[in-house]
Image (tube, rainbow, N blue to C red; front, side):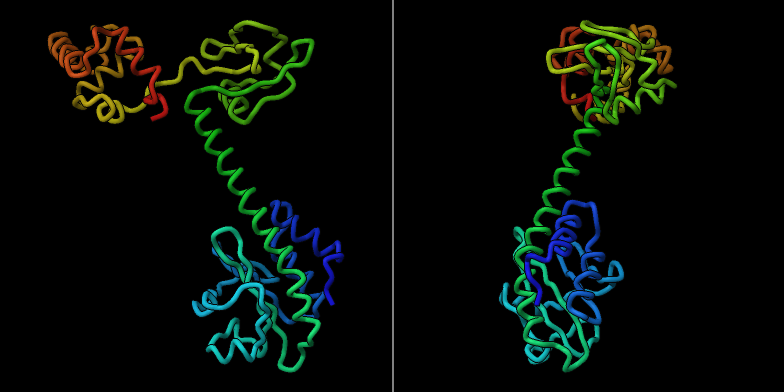
Length: 294
């Protein structure tokens, strides 16, 4: 009979939940432990088998069964439920957050024993914890990925320095910015305190919260984003973007192929529609708002 003290199987459950192993590996171990022909783990994210991801779909009728109760093949047959085409099954459902999961093992008819049902009942609570851990880990990874994408849009990456001011590490955003500039951590040199220029467009600033690498040449978003955000036309947004990037009115007109008179007319419309007084106010609006995330 399976016991929660079976440390190898328990370790595999939580290893899979933490993303360091796979559910298929855990099911292989379960098959060996129970001498089963096949084992499946059906979750809201898909179905896993001992030999990999399965192309099976859990029959809808399983949704009406009680959780934490082991169902025999005869009981499932009586409800018109089959799974994987196997002669005999044992299945138990578990609550995992707002969803459910089912553990199913298959054997030939007559091979199941009472201890097999007891084993599933023992493993189910641990498996539910492992699946809940997986959801938590995946949620953390998703939040970390969003934070990294946000940092990249802002052109800010974290770097680490030791007591002698030597760079000892950096997050993925900082490493990406350095790679784009053809640099590595060793190229940052020794810095402590204040703001230090690395290249014409990269700076390091030391703050009480840590040291950060900043891309000072980060462009404003596409003119279409600016048009929607400021409530102006697309031609006006193109001019606003050029002015926001530091062009003078004459430079912006030349860049966009406009006459100076047309550019001046667009600028008046921009300032009238947005109630801003001039280019400095426009630049503050573009660079200090959520627009930079567009």
